[in-house]
Image 1 (cartoon, helix red, strand yellow):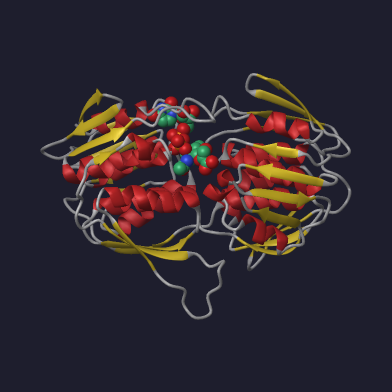
Image 2 (image 1 turned 45 degrees about the vertical axis):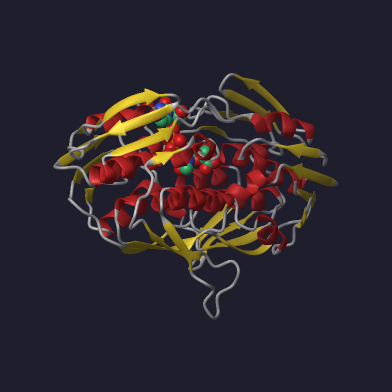
Length: 429
Ligand code: EPU
């Protein structure tokens, strides 16, 4: 198993290219199943999760061709996928695959909408919480699907097609909103989605679906209206930049008192996080290339945040902010409201010398003057990268184990950081 070795205390300086968003790429790839024509996606990040979803979709008969590099392109340019779901050969998504990546459960929506049936394994719990799928099922039921739970599988049937309806989510859910949008796109009649998630990735998927011929109005707001169409077509779409990758590197720069341009980043995708960094004393400026992040040596001011659905502070940046606050000049408070168990990084940060007290969903972080390198590991993607951030500021060597979590969601992390002066290397085996 690969590990990452970091020698801390070097300021990051230079430019980091921001990749396409993982959490838009995955639903966009799944949305390709709504049409028998080719969907072309540009700016797709090279990530383990993208490769895994490619295999999962292949099981349903989806063909994916990856374009070769064009002249002038570097290894850091996103890839282009040509996705064709001309023939769906299997409407079952087995446990062995869905349990490896929760988002693959979302294939249930295009399968039932286009094929009239889907049999998809329930994903089970995961490292950050119980993560049920009841609201995805509710959305499909509101559109007329008959649902049965059979041997760990959700079986959804709509032999005469789905019918438009009203879906009012009792809780804001990204997965529920993606499911509702995809299913409603091919339903007969109008669907109203209320209390929809407003994450930029929802708007990006809706924009792509509209290019494919869907009629979706209001994506990115809490009220979305979808007028179903009988058939969707092929289209070409560029994946939006990854706001979580952007925020992660911004925090890494702040942690090392660096000066880095995050190329291709869009500030409006993570304004809440940038505002918090501003409060902490980090310089944030919009430039023609993206966002410039600067931090002088005057120390980090403590902050108080609560994770919220977009446009609030994202849960996917909670661990990274906590790493930054381990070195603040004072006490910070972080409350996690989205996932009940998303604090696995706490004990590992403590191993590096952080002072953190956990009380249910609240973490109190007392800033310390210095962190010291140690072997660490984490069991999810964002927790793992928070350890990298801490290691960049720690004295001596930190060895981050279980690097495969990082590979799921951060493209060429060690290349991007070493390109800005970090002493970071991957050790194979
Ligand atoms: N929830 C339910 N029932 C449901 C669905 C969700 O109770 O049927 C709950 C969840 O358990 C959670 C809350 O609602 O407590 C929010 O879940 P949501 O559906 O919004 O999250 P998700 O779609 O499963 C996506 C991202 C996550 C990100 C969350 C929140 C993808 C592939 N995943 O998950 O990303 O944390 O939205 O923004 O888009 C990550 O990238 O590391 C990651 C975990």
